[in-house]
Length: 526
Figure (cartoon, rainbow, N blue to C red):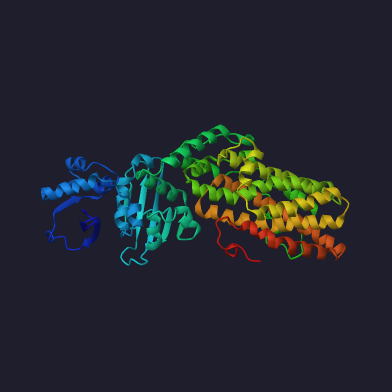
């Protein structure tokens, strides 16, 4: 293997042995034939190219005994063994050979519209000679370049994995999505280029057909759903749309979100003059209302062009993981919109009623955001909001229904039946604003947003979800203000708050536990 090294392969009675020869001068004893090729020839043979055609093209030379050569031909006519099968059978995998073969395995046409560099870091593990770092550079239709020398430009993402985990990935023992979940691999930087490379590698081995068909179907649905909830109808049209769309999505300017309308930046915890408010200095209902007016935003102005491209590129398993993570918010935003109505009717003062009316508008807007994303980006099957919600409800665990049905909906129904029961209203605000929004929503939002920000994913949705988080801060500030006033008026309400939090929170935190978890305590503690 020119530029890679020399290996001796022995086949005897159905067994095969491979050993690296570090002295390539001369022919070792017992050699029947010698095969000489380069990385391009190796990649072509691995992909099933005819050896004869490679020989005619000068990529392959074979020298040796004719009768033994006939046996080689017989082996070549047998069923191919893939790299994954070889790794699963215990063969030693040389990462250097595999990464350098990418220059010849990945069709340059697949890379049009994309320019990035991904670094792959492999820690040696049980094979002390297998570690290293390889830089895979993609440049808009040019042949992929692989080197072990750090590039002059910026590395878009770095994938870190131990050799033992790498072998498990190559052998198909774990999937890339599973390796990420189990923290066998770590991606620092944008994950989209890593996903693209993974798809291209699978395609070069003939293993991407099902994903290509899924991608085709989802693109058709995305196109048919453009403009849901009056949204921007521009759509990334494939390879070259990513960079242009990124420029449109990230710096989106939304009414009321510029930085010249107060030092608080929309955060109720910040003072108008800047800095954090002193402990106990809570905004009044009127101030919270004014903050709502200043910080209104529009779901239909969010641009999901790049989001659509990133979603269809993502393999099915990773899409399912994302759907589960976002599903509780998708369903939850509609649920809290409907369940807030009894609170509005039972509001003890006009000021509370007006603020809750603004919150009802917020929650409906949040539901529209998630449904726009589900319809236009995720390409869910159903053609209406409630149908799409039912799709995601099927993925939810029992803990979700215990929290939202047995917790929030139950207290909302009781408030509807007894709108003049102030003690019950205190319990409801504690459930809604402290547990559902203060514990679940705030924690989940921050975790998801940090992941999206760190990995450059779904910039249109990321922008919208950040604005949802801004709204939730205002809602929680209202809840804290209302409950403080209630306790100051009658200290016994403090016991209602403590009891509600103590009863509901230990059950509610189970919402964070995904279906693949072996131990729920890995995801929460209380």
